[in-house]
Length: 144
Image 1 (spheres, one colour):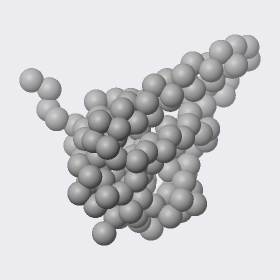
Image 2 (image 1 turned 180 degrees about the horizontal axis):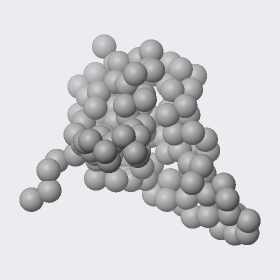
Image 3 (image 1 turned 135 degrees about the vertical axis):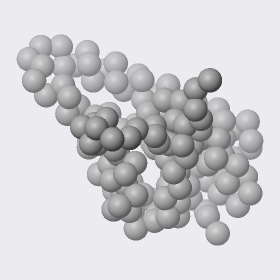
């Protein structure tokens, strides 16, 4: 049913919940996991100096995030590829999914509601609305 499963990650607890689901599905369907982190520079476009330092820090954060996916996949003996790219998060996710012929995108959601969601937007919501592939959203577990 699924051969290629994309897990966009930002290293958050919501992404960790999605990773767990994606790995379980990959085990069941003998699929490959694609770990993707998108370096989003849109919030840093006004920096005059030190942009290189910011990009480097975000890329390191991205490497750590995709490493977490790799570790979970390897622990379950699931094949995995890792990618850190720059761009608009939702556009980069959709482009990657199309380019790599992904069957399923598994994404975490923070469960924001109301004004928070409206003001912050939602990468997951945009992917759900625009993807040609099936998209599974995994809600972050409620904090105790």
